Image (tube, rainbow, N blue to C red):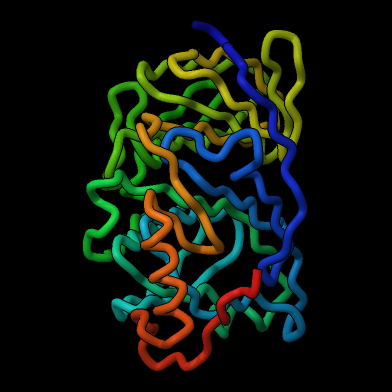
Length: 290
């Protein structure tokens, strides 16, 4: 199949301490392959000594988080004791498994100047048989992410493979995540048999079969569809997806699982203080009263 579009998603406005555009999930599309959540953070202009990003410790189960920045700095701290700064072009890959908590804040030095924060944050659901694995954290620097350059595009292979280049990112199910920056107008084609794919436009626009897809829109393609697009000269877009899971996933707040019972237990553990906590950080986001 070629350009078999299932759905076009319009991002909705949200706030996590900085403005975000929430893309996934939506009522008509809960997941794209294993991807169950996508926030497009910013671009947010933060004023020196006034504004700051400060996401207090919060829990996760049953998923991995993937953070990729275009601008700014974020300091990750988690219940494993990991403290890791992420800057543009790098990747933080945190696997919650049976349970992890973490905070996401700007480093103190960053707040001394006017700056922007801009990036993408995904949640990637774990296969059912791996939902209860031990939590872990991996950081990937720029040199760990394969870069493929053509006369019209720079393609970063963050997860999966493209043109015989394979990412070092240790995913738990077959998945794809490419970050693509155009250098001039041109075309891009991508095929990945067995995967369900989507394309999200961060900046600029792409054209698919005569239809224009603009900033903060996501196109979801039917499984096994190939992507054949035209892109503007200033386009910045991401291709993501993977093999769909055979069973559904439940999502409540920051908790993801194939089991509602596991989500209920995690809620109780977080509320009662029995969840792994970030060392030395006595703040936490309380359980929402939904």
